[in-house]
Image 1 (tube, rainbow, N blue to C red):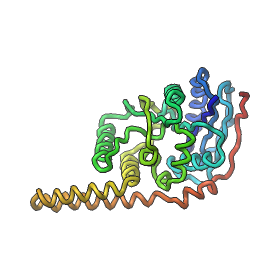
Image 2: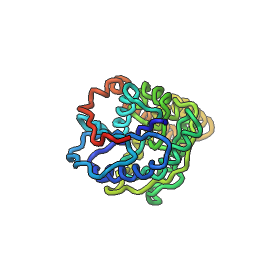
Image 3: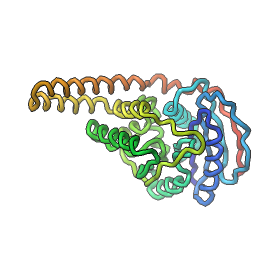
Image 4: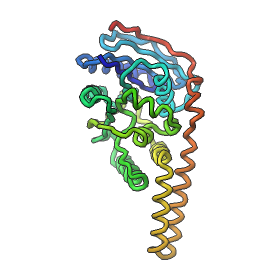
Amino acid sequence: MKKFQILMPCYNDWSSVFKLLQNIDKEVSNLKGIFSVLIVNDGSTDKMPKLEGSFKNIKSIQIMNIKVNQGHTRSNATGIKYFSKNGNFDYIILMDGDGEDRPEEIKLLVEKALYEKNISVVAKRIKRSEGFVFAFFYHLHKLITLIFTGKNMNFGHYSCLTKKDIAIISSKKNLWGNFSGTVKKFIDKLVNIPCIRGKRYVQPSKMSFIKLIVHSFSILAVFKYQVLLRSTLFFILIFLFTSDPYRIFFESILIIFTTLVFFASKLESAEKLENCEQNIANIKTVHPGRL
């Protein structure tokens, strides 16, 4: 049977993670595979409560304790890097630990992965839970990304990646800055399943407009040279077909935009990714499993 390792970050949201674990245990009960969970404790200041309840279908649950808070993306990058060197798995399922990545859709990811064989699966968002205004700016972000990179970024972290593809992205410095952009750039073939963005179990959503902007630029940064090329082409078209003062305005916007994309690329770091395991304080097993 194929081995699936579920990777999820947590920062001071243990109630959500523990509820999610119970739901995952139910959802994988009839699936063909062996399922384990690694929770990346991203420097939480709240002490982790004792894990209550029994797990009949999850083989093991481990906590990777990170020394200092480093953020969602880098926590996932650390987990991916760790598994690329140490993991005994066939697939890694990445998901948020707060309920927004619905455990009901694990079945779709797993069945698609087993059917396709050796092809990674991403969860394509067909519906979101945020309000109209946020949804509008989210779709604007997707449109801008498509225009300047040629890539339709319709997925986030929720995915099921093959061992081969994990080996590929684990060596790319872009992973330290953005996960989905790295997957889109370096994995040649992807298939998708439809998913609905769920509501957080406990805490309110942490995705603010500022974080959406940072997220958008971090994706663009993965494709910064494509952005530079397309910005240059737009610059020439504006110069040729636009008159002052609009020409100066639009060209200034393009220059600022492209500069910010290259600035965002500084979030990437080959050195930090390579040495990220030094940030791990310890790894503890909280559920040894019975499979």
